[in-house]
Amino acid sequence: MADTAGITNWWGLLAAPALLAALAYAAAAGSAALTLRASGGPVSSAPAAPAREAAGLLLRRPRTVPGADTLLWRAGIATVPVAAVMAVLVVPLGGRAVADLSIGVVWFNAMEVLLWGGMWLAGWGANSVWGLVGGYRYLAQGLSHELPHMFALTTAALGAGSLRVSDIAAAQQDAWFVLVMPVAFAVYLVSALAMSVRPPFDHPAGADAAGGAAAEPAGPDRLVLLAGRHLMLAAAAAMAVPLFLGGGAGPLLPGWTWSLLKTAAVLALLVWVGGRLPTVRMDRFAEVGWVVLLPLVLLQALAVSVFVVAGWM
Image 1 (cartoon, rainbow, N blue to C red):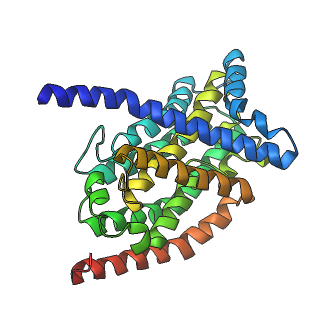
Image 2 (image 1 turned 60 degrees about the vertical axis):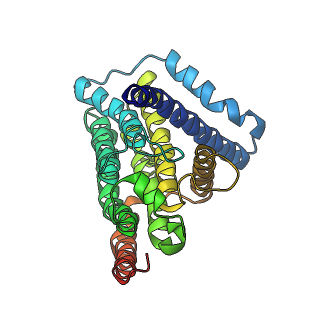
């Protein structure tokens, strides 16, 4: 039995990044389709657009910036995709995760904080004015969405009485948590877009700052940073399924199929919303995060606490 479990984990370690990469590629292709449609270009070329962009970046030379701390700069860039892959290891696929940790929710949140460090170093280590501006913007935006996001995660864990992600999914046999705690679900989706620097919360990488935190990376460095942002969006979409959408629960199809379908649906929603809304300045998002999102998700957590104490969950 131990050998079988070990083999399963090894396959999971290979499959999880592969599935995450496929979802991230789909997100990039969806974004390209929305951009082409808005500009009147041929939408049929969208599926191949990420591959063409990746090939072009691989053929370009990395940029050298005078006075840059190359070690910290490249470490920050590499941290972004690594954090996304590490985060998805606790997400169950049809009831089974690569690492079914008893503190899975805390682990996922910790990997998001690691992403903070990576994005900050990508901007700060380049010794670039625009990179530094983008890094500070990301920190300010992160402080605005991280607390609401953390309480959204906590609310789901509170409803299940466990920090283990598989336990949270199993606790939704009678009703999905999206029906019981819709505010926490909405806050989670908003913060998922913000943490992955996706529209409409892409001000840290805005054109008004020449790309911000992504201003200086070029060639393969830029490819790694962009891929990491898509990977984190896909990881956040995958985590929404066991937290709020019942995990792999569903009729007829196997659990892993339902997990993938639900993840694809959440990811499509995030990409579509991002393509429809204009960029929100991080100072305005900060006001919304502290004045609107945080009080709402705290009230949601309080309501769920009352339900749990009363025995209704």
